[in-house]
Length: 154
Image (cartoon, rainbow, N blue to C red; front, side, top):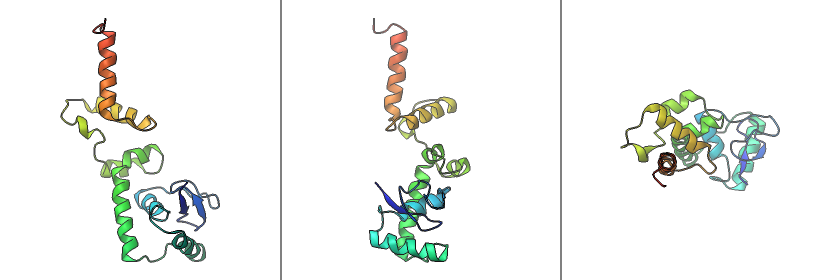
């Protein structure tokens, strides 16, 4: 289980993007989601998390971070931007952030002529699977199903 620090109150919590048990704050938006990832055991030691949690609790703000931590934030921010569509679906980003940051999920189908409506439906289907499905597999399932209904396997 991921150990993290609430970016609003400094309380320790389980999961980067879960609501804080103490103040109920849930990260929202690219910056908050990225800082929440940085302030977790994915990038920091337990001691570092404890120090930052104490600072936030006492000062009600994030501390001034070292260049190393700022670099980790920028890297996490790029990761968040690359996962924007999925984070919108989880309620962690506004749709506007996804529209600005998102690269197409179905890059592997870029050379296949699909209408935007079909491409979006495939992306939504992929993201709603647990774990997320590969677009190639979804296209294969669709084609197989269509061929079966058309009697090609009889």
